[in-house]
Length: 88
Image (cartoon, rainbow, N blue to C red; front, side, top):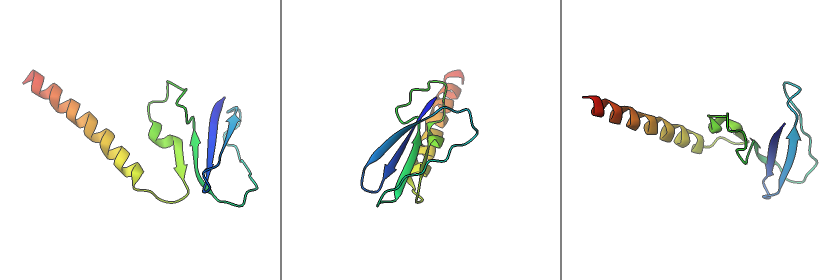
C-alpha cells in the first residue's frame, strides 16, 4: 500500500491509501475548490524509490520540476568530475 495526498487550492489536504492491486486508481472528491496537486508517497516511506521527482503531479505547469531535475543532474555531474579529477 502507498499513501496518496491530494492538495486543494484552499490548502486543504486529503490523504488516501492505494493498495496497488489495480494498475490505476481514480479518486473523486466533491469540493468547492480545484485540486492543486497530487503526491504519491508524500512522506517518502518507500526507500526503494530512487526518483522522487515523478511522485507528484501539478495541475498547472511549474518550472520547479525543471529546476529540481537540473539540480540533480548538476549534482551527479559534479561528483563525476570529482572522481575524474581524483584519478587524473
